[in-house]
Image (tube, rainbow, N blue to C red; front, side, top):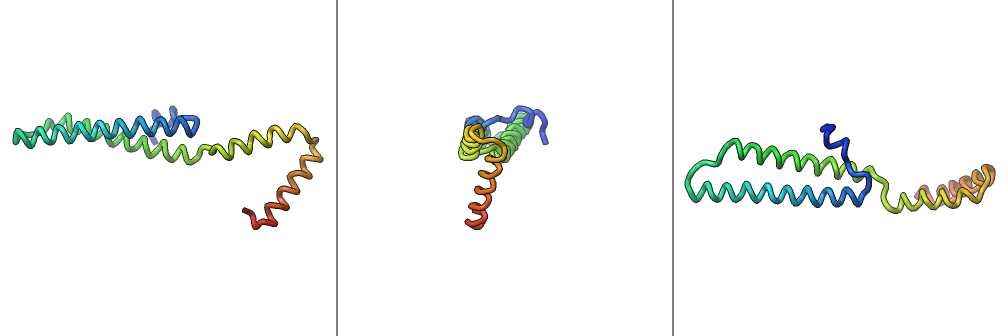
Amino acid sequence: MDTKITNCLPTSRAECRARLANLRNDIAAIKAQIAAADIERQGERGRMDPRWFHRAKTALRHKLREVELVMAHMADLPGRKETFKDHLIEVVREDYDDAEWRDVLDEAHRRLNANGGE
C-alpha cells in the first residue's frame, strides 16, 4: 500500500467525498488529455509521444488507485448515525453511576436479544 497516500487519508466522510470529487475531476481531465492527443495523432497520421503517453497513463492509474483507497477508507469511517449514537451515549452516561449504567446496558442487551439481534 502506498504510504504517501495512506498517511494523508481524510479523517471524515465529508472530507472523503470532497477528495473523491477532486480525484474524479483529475481522472476526467487526464482522460480528456489522452483523448485529445489521440485525436491529434489520428489527424496528423503521426505518433503520440510515448513518454508523455506513459506518464499520463501512470498518473491515471495512480489516481484510480487513490480512489480505491479513499473509498475503502471511507467505508471504515463511522457514519453520521454511529457518531450520533456515540455522542448520545456520552451525554446520557453522565446521568448514571456505574451500577445504574450496568442496568441500562443489561436492559439494552435484553431488548436487542428480544428483537433477534437487530
